[in-house]
Image 1: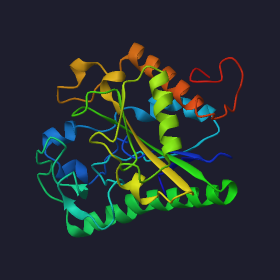
Image 2: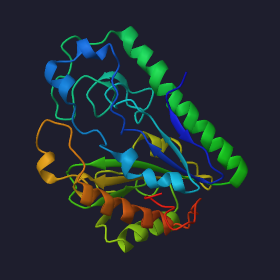
Image 3: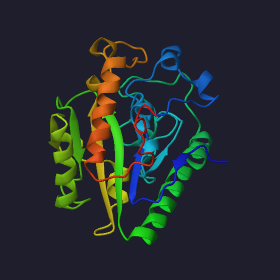
Length: 265
């Protein structure tokens, strides 16, 4: 049974949130170091809640409740199975380059994680894309992430240096963020990961990665300590309101057009 969360709508827009889950497997409970069990850094904190307004719009969404430390679905299947977080499906170290396991997982366990958590995400995403391409002829895949450094801008948009979407769509999205006063850069460090790269099909699937700086919705004082950062209520709602306006500028239709049909519905 798949844990993947999908909202299927009559729309060519697909929003993927692959790194916001925080669940770990029960086996990891006794494999991780005590510190790693308490805290694993640089999850895309609270993005499912931040983009919660999408439930009120005619868009498709896909996400996983499991942590990127269980398995990273934004890595190619042919990548290293176990090793550095930058290029492995299962991380041996955290994003601060610290060892996270007191007892490292076996090759068999890593293979089980890939079968149980990695492959279902891509199977569901691929099926969603195929369904919407058949219906609309073109799909817009927007992969949502968040970050802390090395870019100082509010938002970094990535399309693999112009290879995963048209200039027209990329410029439209860029201008939408700029119009809502997000300092936005293009292909600066974050050029787009595996999902953005692998699902792009010229003139059929236009894919973009959106990286949102943590400081837009999390207190800076929460970002330099080894604990799960709490969302700042004022920042959080301001950011969600602005993000909702960004995607409205793409012409995405709201399902509930009543007064409170948006993020407060």
